[in-house]
Length: 295
Image 1: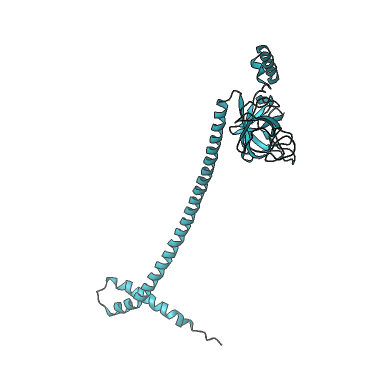
Image 2 (image 1 turned 90 degrees about the vertical axis):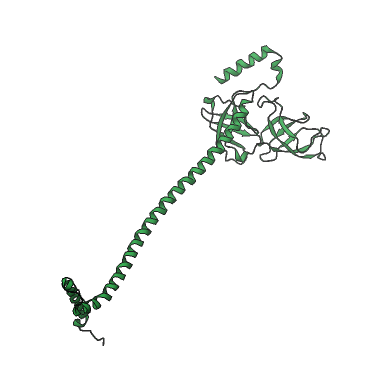
């Protein structure tokens, strides 16, 4: 059975300490060196030391708590600032990249005979067979069907459908795409044909023609859509052992379609041949017809 300690034994040390404290207070104005004062001082001194130590620890813990609260708030504030700065850095890089792309497009426009507008690629056709996308310019912006869509790197495709505010662009990689082309080095002609994927092929080039890997394929300007001299791609494979009278060739597109964000859209169709410069009367008729289509 647990032995219960008498209450007076528990209270006795506390009472003695209080008496000593009272005695010390009472003897403040008394003469120095009294025996009772010395005894009281000896009793209260260790207690004061313990209390002072406890008070210092409590104060230290309390101050540490407030310091931790302050540090947490400061860390959260710094984290918000860092997040904001990271977002600003990302935005600045995006703006810088966009500005660089626009500068290249504007430089191309300034050196071109045709009038172009800049348009954004806003959606890709999800179809399996069609290679096309939607741009943010339409008939209200002067876009016509069968006009060239290009970048500063080369041909993208042509417009095949328009609405007041949007247009659909058929890529040169599409199965139904074919563009009259020439080899820039020696003007060997052929028809650049899409296959729904990379690579393209340069068709109807006879085996006696000089075509080499690395040759640049450009537009001839004879199809009434694309102006002459625009880059289409580079020859990667030439197979003279293929069946028939024509070479089997493969061409890698000049434009990287996966990275397209902005394009240039021509604002007028081109005549299929340069014979308009020979006959001013025919040229005038064509220009009138083109102006009527714009309206």
